[in-house]
Length: 351
Image 1 (cartoon, one colour):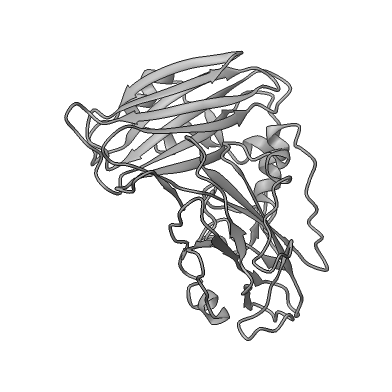
Image 2 (cartoon, rainbow, N blue to C red):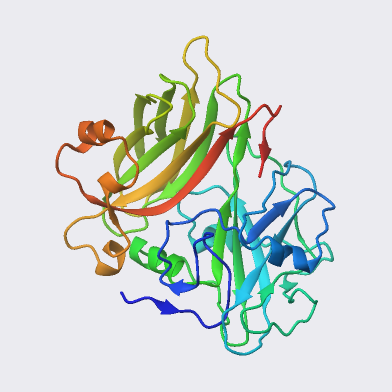
Protein backbone atom coordinates (compact mmCIF):
# COMPACT_ATOMS: atom_id res chain seq x y z
CA UNK A 1 0.00 0.00 0.00
CA UNK A 2 1.31 3.48 -0.94
CA UNK A 3 1.32 5.65 2.22
CA UNK A 4 -0.93 8.70 2.26
CA UNK A 5 -0.50 11.76 4.42
CA UNK A 6 -3.28 12.51 6.90
CA UNK A 7 -4.79 15.99 6.56
CA UNK A 8 -6.25 16.74 9.98
CA UNK A 9 -5.45 16.73 13.70
CA UNK A 10 -3.75 13.45 14.59
CA UNK A 11 -2.46 11.68 17.68
CA UNK A 12 0.67 9.56 17.37
CA UNK A 13 1.04 5.82 17.76
CA UNK A 14 4.75 6.28 18.48
CA UNK A 15 7.44 8.94 18.42
CA UNK A 16 8.23 7.90 14.85
CA UNK A 17 4.64 8.50 13.70
CA UNK A 18 4.50 11.34 11.16
CA UNK A 19 0.85 10.94 10.26
CA UNK A 20 1.22 8.60 7.31
CA UNK A 21 -1.61 6.17 6.51
CA UNK A 22 -0.96 3.38 7.26
CA UNK A 23 1.33 3.90 10.24
CA UNK A 24 4.65 2.42 9.15
CA UNK A 25 6.28 1.96 12.56
CA UNK A 26 6.16 -0.77 15.14
CA UNK A 27 2.64 -1.69 16.26
CA UNK A 28 2.57 0.78 19.15
CA UNK A 29 0.83 0.35 22.48
CA UNK A 30 2.51 3.33 24.17
CA UNK A 31 1.39 6.53 22.48
CA UNK A 32 3.59 9.47 23.55
CA UNK A 33 0.54 11.72 23.22
CA UNK A 34 -1.43 9.96 25.97
CA UNK A 35 0.40 11.50 28.92
CA UNK A 36 -0.24 10.15 32.45
CA UNK A 37 0.82 12.54 35.22
CA UNK A 38 0.76 12.53 39.04
CA UNK A 39 -2.21 14.15 40.82
CA UNK A 40 -2.56 17.94 40.75
CA UNK A 41 0.04 18.30 37.98
CA UNK A 42 -0.36 21.42 35.85
CA UNK A 43 1.45 22.32 32.64
CA UNK A 44 1.34 25.44 30.47
CA UNK A 45 0.21 24.61 26.96
CA UNK A 46 3.70 25.47 25.69
CA UNK A 47 5.06 22.46 27.66
CA UNK A 48 3.27 20.07 25.32
CA UNK A 49 5.08 21.63 22.37
CA UNK A 50 8.44 21.74 24.14
CA UNK A 51 8.22 18.00 24.89
CA UNK A 52 6.89 16.96 21.47
CA UNK A 53 10.01 14.89 20.71
CA UNK A 54 9.67 13.04 24.03
CA UNK A 55 7.30 10.68 25.79
CA UNK A 56 6.69 12.70 28.99
CA UNK A 57 4.32 10.19 30.58
CA UNK A 58 5.11 9.62 34.26
CA UNK A 59 4.47 6.89 36.79
CA UNK A 60 1.30 7.38 38.78
CA UNK A 61 -0.16 5.34 41.62
CA UNK A 62 -3.43 3.46 41.26
CA UNK A 63 -6.30 4.33 43.57
CA UNK A 64 -5.55 8.07 43.52
CA UNK A 65 -6.85 10.88 41.33
CA UNK A 66 -4.06 10.68 38.80
CA UNK A 67 -4.54 12.63 35.60
CA UNK A 68 -3.98 12.19 31.87
CA UNK A 69 -3.40 14.79 29.16
CA UNK A 70 -3.80 14.27 25.41
CA UNK A 71 -2.09 16.17 22.63
CA UNK A 72 -2.07 16.21 18.85
CA UNK A 73 -0.87 18.10 15.80
CA UNK A 74 -2.77 19.73 12.96
CA UNK A 75 -1.56 18.37 9.61
CA UNK A 76 -4.26 20.26 7.77
CA UNK A 77 -3.33 23.17 5.50
CA UNK A 78 -5.77 25.47 7.31
CA UNK A 79 -6.84 26.09 10.88
CA UNK A 80 -9.34 23.74 12.48
CA UNK A 81 -10.81 22.72 15.84
CA UNK A 82 -10.64 19.41 17.69
CA UNK A 83 -11.98 17.61 20.73
CA UNK A 84 -10.48 14.58 22.46
CA UNK A 85 -12.04 11.62 24.26
CA UNK A 86 -10.30 9.11 26.55
CA UNK A 87 -11.31 5.60 27.64
CA UNK A 88 -9.81 3.15 30.14
CA UNK A 89 -10.38 -0.60 30.28
CA UNK A 90 -8.82 -3.63 31.95
CA UNK A 91 -5.76 -4.91 30.16
CA UNK A 92 -6.23 -6.82 26.94
CA UNK A 93 -3.91 -8.10 24.21
CA UNK A 94 -6.60 -7.31 21.63
CA UNK A 95 -8.41 -4.03 22.26
CA UNK A 96 -11.67 -4.63 20.42
CA UNK A 97 -13.98 -1.64 20.60
CA UNK A 98 -16.50 -3.33 22.91
CA UNK A 99 -13.77 -3.62 25.57
CA UNK A 100 -13.03 0.10 25.96
CA UNK A 101 -15.97 2.04 24.52
CA UNK A 102 -18.11 1.53 27.63
CA UNK A 103 -15.48 3.03 29.96
CA UNK A 104 -15.09 6.75 29.15
CA UNK A 105 -13.12 9.00 31.48
CA UNK A 106 -14.19 12.52 32.46
CA UNK A 107 -12.03 15.59 32.88
CA UNK A 108 -11.40 17.37 36.18
CA UNK A 109 -14.27 19.75 35.39
CA UNK A 110 -16.62 16.83 34.75
CA UNK A 111 -16.67 17.05 30.96
CA UNK A 112 -16.81 13.92 28.81
CA UNK A 113 -14.31 15.44 26.37
CA UNK A 114 -11.43 17.89 26.26
CA UNK A 115 -11.30 20.84 23.88
CA UNK A 116 -7.86 21.01 22.28
CA UNK A 117 -6.11 24.36 21.91
CA UNK A 118 -2.84 25.62 20.50
CA UNK A 119 0.04 26.70 22.76
CA UNK A 120 -1.52 30.17 23.07
CA UNK A 121 -4.86 28.79 24.20
CA UNK A 122 -6.67 29.39 20.92
CA UNK A 123 -9.31 26.79 19.99
CA UNK A 124 -8.55 27.48 16.32
CA UNK A 125 -5.50 25.29 15.73
CA UNK A 126 -3.28 26.54 12.93
CA UNK A 127 -1.49 24.43 10.30
CA UNK A 128 1.21 22.21 11.82
CA UNK A 129 0.43 23.54 15.31
CA UNK A 130 0.66 21.27 18.33
CA UNK A 131 -2.45 21.20 20.50
CA UNK A 132 -3.35 19.98 23.99
CA UNK A 133 -5.67 20.89 26.87
CA UNK A 134 -5.41 22.17 30.43
CA UNK A 135 -8.49 20.36 31.81
CA UNK A 136 -6.99 16.88 32.32
CA UNK A 137 -8.82 13.58 32.31
CA UNK A 138 -9.03 11.98 35.75
CA UNK A 139 -7.85 8.40 36.21
CA UNK A 140 -9.11 7.11 39.55
CA UNK A 141 -9.01 3.35 39.23
CA UNK A 142 -7.85 0.72 41.71
CA UNK A 143 -4.85 -1.40 40.83
CA UNK A 144 -6.54 -4.60 39.62
CA UNK A 145 -5.18 -7.90 40.87
CA UNK A 146 -2.66 -9.13 38.29
CA UNK A 147 -4.07 -6.77 35.65
CA UNK A 148 -3.27 -3.32 34.31
CA UNK A 149 -5.25 -0.75 32.34
CA UNK A 150 -5.34 0.26 28.70
CA UNK A 151 -6.19 3.80 27.65
CA UNK A 152 -7.62 4.60 24.21
CA UNK A 153 -7.73 8.17 22.90
CA UNK A 154 -10.01 9.40 20.10
CA UNK A 155 -9.75 12.77 18.29
CA UNK A 156 -12.83 14.32 16.65
CA UNK A 157 -12.75 17.25 14.19
CA UNK A 158 -15.31 18.90 11.88
CA UNK A 159 -13.97 16.86 8.94
CA UNK A 160 -13.45 13.56 10.78
CA UNK A 161 -16.24 12.52 13.15
CA UNK A 162 -14.25 9.39 13.98
CA UNK A 163 -17.18 7.40 15.46
CA UNK A 164 -16.53 4.44 17.73
CA UNK A 165 -16.68 1.39 15.47
CA UNK A 166 -18.85 -1.64 16.28
CA UNK A 167 -16.94 -4.67 17.56
CA UNK A 168 -14.63 -6.03 14.88
CA UNK A 169 -15.51 -9.42 13.43
CA UNK A 170 -12.03 -10.32 12.14
CA UNK A 171 -8.40 -9.63 12.90
CA UNK A 172 -7.98 -8.11 9.44
CA UNK A 173 -10.63 -5.48 10.20
CA UNK A 174 -9.13 -4.78 13.63
CA UNK A 175 -5.55 -4.34 12.40
CA UNK A 176 -6.65 -2.21 9.45
CA UNK A 177 -8.57 0.12 11.77
CA UNK A 178 -5.59 0.52 14.10
CA UNK A 179 -2.94 1.36 11.52
CA UNK A 180 -5.15 3.45 9.23
CA UNK A 181 -6.62 5.78 11.87
CA UNK A 182 -4.27 8.63 12.81
CA UNK A 183 -6.96 10.06 15.08
CA UNK A 184 -6.91 7.02 17.40
CA UNK A 185 -4.10 5.88 19.72
CA UNK A 186 -3.67 3.84 22.86
CA UNK A 187 -1.34 3.42 25.77
CA UNK A 188 -1.03 0.15 27.64
CA UNK A 189 -0.20 1.06 31.21
CA UNK A 190 2.99 -0.39 32.63
CA UNK A 191 2.65 -2.48 35.78
CA UNK A 192 5.29 -2.13 38.47
CA UNK A 193 6.02 -5.23 40.52
CA UNK A 194 8.30 -5.78 43.53
CA UNK A 195 11.82 -6.93 42.66
CA UNK A 196 11.99 -9.48 45.47
CA UNK A 197 9.62 -12.12 44.10
CA UNK A 198 7.75 -13.35 41.03
CA UNK A 199 6.14 -10.95 38.58
CA UNK A 200 2.71 -12.13 37.45
CA UNK A 201 0.32 -10.54 34.98
CA UNK A 202 -3.02 -11.62 33.53
CA UNK A 203 -4.15 -10.50 30.09
CA UNK A 204 -7.35 -11.08 28.19
CA UNK A 205 -7.04 -12.24 24.58
CA UNK A 206 -9.39 -13.29 21.81
CA UNK A 207 -9.62 -14.93 18.42
CA UNK A 208 -12.19 -12.78 16.63
CA UNK A 209 -11.82 -14.67 13.36
CA UNK A 210 -14.48 -17.16 12.31
CA UNK A 211 -12.00 -20.04 12.08
CA UNK A 212 -9.61 -21.67 14.54
CA UNK A 213 -6.21 -19.96 14.25
CA UNK A 214 -2.70 -20.22 15.68
CA UNK A 215 -1.62 -17.41 17.99
CA UNK A 216 1.77 -16.61 19.48
CA UNK A 217 2.26 -15.39 23.04
CA UNK A 218 5.77 -13.94 23.05
CA UNK A 219 7.39 -12.90 26.33
CA UNK A 220 10.50 -10.75 25.89
CA UNK A 221 12.72 -9.69 28.78
CA UNK A 222 15.33 -6.98 29.24
CA UNK A 223 17.84 -7.13 32.06
CA UNK A 224 16.55 -10.24 33.84
CA UNK A 225 19.06 -12.63 35.40
CA UNK A 226 19.89 -15.76 33.47
CA UNK A 227 17.63 -18.73 34.30
CA UNK A 228 14.64 -16.56 35.17
CA UNK A 229 11.71 -18.97 34.86
CA UNK A 230 8.80 -17.86 32.66
CA UNK A 231 5.44 -19.65 32.61
CA UNK A 232 2.76 -18.79 30.02
CA UNK A 233 -0.61 -20.32 30.94
CA UNK A 234 -4.02 -20.22 29.30
CA UNK A 235 -6.39 -20.53 32.24
CA UNK A 236 -9.83 -20.32 30.60
CA UNK A 237 -11.75 -23.58 30.06
CA UNK A 238 -11.98 -24.40 26.39
CA UNK A 239 -8.42 -23.27 25.67
CA UNK A 240 -6.04 -24.21 28.45
CA UNK A 241 -2.31 -24.55 27.84
CA UNK A 242 0.99 -24.12 29.65
CA UNK A 243 4.50 -23.39 28.40
CA UNK A 244 7.59 -23.03 30.59
CA UNK A 245 10.88 -21.54 29.46
CA UNK A 246 13.92 -19.73 30.85
CA UNK A 247 15.54 -16.42 29.95
CA UNK A 248 19.13 -16.66 28.80
CA UNK A 249 22.00 -14.20 29.03
CA UNK A 250 20.70 -10.74 30.06
CA UNK A 251 22.98 -9.24 27.41
CA UNK A 252 21.16 -11.06 24.62
CA UNK A 253 17.61 -11.71 23.46
CA UNK A 254 15.54 -13.04 26.36
CA UNK A 255 12.44 -14.69 24.90
CA UNK A 256 9.96 -17.41 25.76
CA UNK A 257 7.33 -18.35 23.19
CA UNK A 258 4.02 -20.21 23.42
CA UNK A 259 2.05 -21.08 20.27
CA UNK A 260 -1.56 -22.11 20.71
CA UNK A 261 -4.47 -22.98 18.44
CA UNK A 262 -7.38 -20.83 19.62
CA UNK A 263 -10.96 -21.71 18.69
CA UNK A 264 -13.00 -19.36 16.52
CA UNK A 265 -14.73 -16.64 18.52
CA UNK A 266 -12.97 -17.63 21.75
CA UNK A 267 -11.91 -15.15 24.43
CA UNK A 268 -9.98 -15.98 27.55
CA UNK A 269 -7.20 -15.13 29.98
CA UNK A 270 -3.47 -15.81 29.72
CA UNK A 271 -1.35 -15.63 32.86
CA UNK A 272 2.37 -14.87 32.54
CA UNK A 273 4.65 -15.38 35.56
CA UNK A 274 8.37 -14.65 35.75
CA UNK A 275 10.22 -16.09 38.76
CA UNK A 276 13.81 -15.21 39.76
CA UNK A 277 16.39 -18.01 39.81
CA UNK A 278 17.08 -19.61 43.21
CA UNK A 279 18.53 -17.05 45.62
CA UNK A 280 18.19 -14.40 42.92
CA UNK A 281 16.18 -11.19 42.61
CA UNK A 282 15.09 -9.03 39.70
CA UNK A 283 17.17 -5.88 39.21
CA UNK A 284 15.31 -2.62 39.52
CA UNK A 285 14.21 -1.55 36.04
CA UNK A 286 14.14 -4.97 34.37
CA UNK A 287 11.20 -5.11 31.97
CA UNK A 288 9.20 -7.78 30.23
CA UNK A 289 6.84 -7.37 27.27
CA UNK A 290 3.94 -9.72 26.60
CA UNK A 291 3.03 -9.60 22.90
CA UNK A 292 0.15 -11.27 21.05
CA UNK A 293 0.59 -12.32 17.41
CA UNK A 294 -1.68 -14.01 14.89
CA UNK A 295 0.12 -16.53 12.66
CA UNK A 296 -0.48 -15.97 8.95
CA UNK A 297 -1.51 -18.70 6.56
CA UNK A 298 -2.48 -19.21 2.95
CA UNK A 299 -5.88 -17.76 2.18
CA UNK A 300 -5.65 -14.99 4.78
CA UNK A 301 -6.98 -11.60 3.65
CA UNK A 302 -4.22 -9.50 2.07
CA UNK A 303 -5.20 -6.56 4.27
CA UNK A 304 -4.09 -8.66 7.25
CA UNK A 305 -0.89 -10.08 5.80
CA UNK A 306 0.35 -6.69 4.55
CA UNK A 307 0.91 -5.73 8.19
CA UNK A 308 2.75 -8.93 9.05
CA UNK A 309 6.43 -9.73 9.49
CA UNK A 310 8.54 -12.85 9.24
CA UNK A 311 8.78 -14.40 12.66
CA UNK A 312 12.58 -14.29 12.56
CA UNK A 313 12.44 -10.48 12.36
CA UNK A 314 10.42 -9.73 15.51
CA UNK A 315 13.07 -10.21 18.17
CA UNK A 316 12.72 -13.89 19.07
CA UNK A 317 15.95 -15.58 20.07
CA UNK A 318 16.94 -17.75 17.07
CA UNK A 319 17.24 -20.92 19.16
CA UNK A 320 13.82 -20.35 20.75
CA UNK A 321 12.29 -19.85 17.32
CA UNK A 322 13.97 -22.92 15.80
CA UNK A 323 13.06 -25.12 18.78
CA UNK A 324 9.42 -24.03 18.39
CA UNK A 325 8.78 -23.96 14.64
CA UNK A 326 11.89 -25.46 13.03
CA UNK A 327 13.06 -24.06 9.69
CA UNK A 328 9.58 -23.20 8.39
CA UNK A 329 9.38 -19.55 9.52
CA UNK A 330 5.84 -18.12 9.17
CA UNK A 331 4.52 -14.59 8.89
CA UNK A 332 2.95 -13.19 12.06
CA UNK A 333 0.79 -10.09 12.67
CA UNK A 334 1.02 -8.22 15.96
CA UNK A 335 -2.31 -7.53 17.65
CA UNK A 336 -1.24 -6.03 20.97
CA UNK A 337 1.26 -5.98 23.81
CA UNK A 338 1.83 -4.84 27.37
CA UNK A 339 4.92 -4.22 29.52
CA UNK A 340 5.78 -5.12 33.11
CA UNK A 341 8.59 -3.31 34.91
CA UNK A 342 10.37 -4.62 38.00
CA UNK A 343 10.70 -1.86 40.60
CA UNK A 344 11.07 -1.56 44.32
CA UNK A 345 7.52 -0.23 44.75
CA UNK A 346 5.58 -1.80 47.59
CA UNK A 347 2.20 -3.07 46.49
CA UNK A 348 2.71 -2.25 42.85
CA UNK A 349 1.72 0.82 40.87
CA UNK A 350 0.53 1.74 37.44
CA UNK A 351 1.92 4.14 34.87
